[in-house]
Length: 218
Image (cartoon, rainbow, N blue to C red; front, top):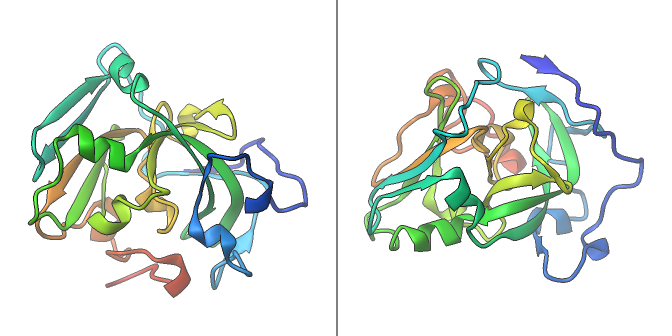
């Protein structure tokens, strides 16, 4: 499903140097040219998903972590909200060829989540993210899941993430195409081998680096 969001940016591109002290700066925002090959800038925030916005009962919302970790985790919404937060300044690149530059995300660092799980076992190499949208999944290397600029975000540009954009909580992995930033995040599975998710089973790239145009196939 595709639509257009009303969050309109100005013509000026938000810059790393303008950000407050303490915010994590995604390294790709420091590039001389921040728009990857085949992309163009949008000042809007388009809405794109596979199956539409799911209905989530927040009284039953859980965030779970399983697999090759020290201990399994299951958190309620209240417990998740109480975790330490970080802010990240990052660009956002959709495989459908638009880029929204200079987003500010706030939420829980993926490194904090790894610590909460009692650490990650040495044989873990990949992460599979699960969404609340009808069993949706996506995969990524552990190394990029644990990048300093990766987080489970609760707000975007100072406002709670809206339902159509993946709220109440959305995985954000800025250095990969945006389909890897799972909307409506429900949990994570830590794996010793790569496992394709929904779009990867349907022809999208297993990795998804926008600077290499890893859109389709392996």
